[in-house]
Image (cartoon, rainbow, N blue to C red; front, side, top):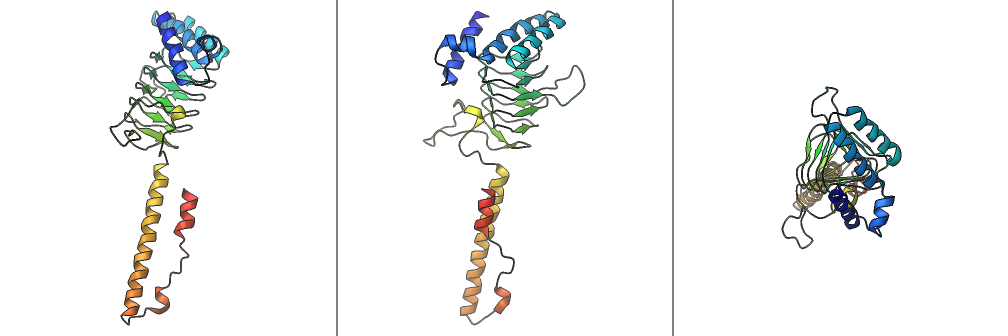
Length: 251
């Protein structure tokens, strides 16, 4: 237990620039307190002291604002930052080195007891503030879930999920030099570079294509006019299409 506690304290110092000392982390970080109490609750639950496990979990919720079901499996060096409003369900599994911010729910969508109702987070997953991960699926190693995202399907390793319902942005991140994929870069709150909503990016692509089509059509009409073929008013656009204005709305 003390080995796990030392690892937890070190991981907080590594991932939170506001942590000034190990003593401060030990005494003032509710995420650490919630993990300590969860280990007691989980140990009681595994020994079939179900009421005791639930009671310790309830005390932890009262003291920290973080609710972790005693049956949930929490890995090593997990960091629950701020923590208020975090809910981790009964069959949830949180992998080593994961980071969970305030308001996160690892919830279930099934009412059938005994089934895998809650998500499994791989190693090094970051779940941004207010995100909801709902269902008995897997979130791959090194994945990022943006703040306030609602994830209802599996997330591949190294991918970033944003939006409601969440959309997958990509399955790997490159180093700034453009070299090999990098999966071990810490992203606070699940925020990464180039994390625009994929639907917005698709709309922008369609607008750019429409604008380019208009430009080429205008050039075609101009060349025909030079050749003596005049379409008159029929060649003038009547729909008031303004690609730049629409792009500003979507962007």
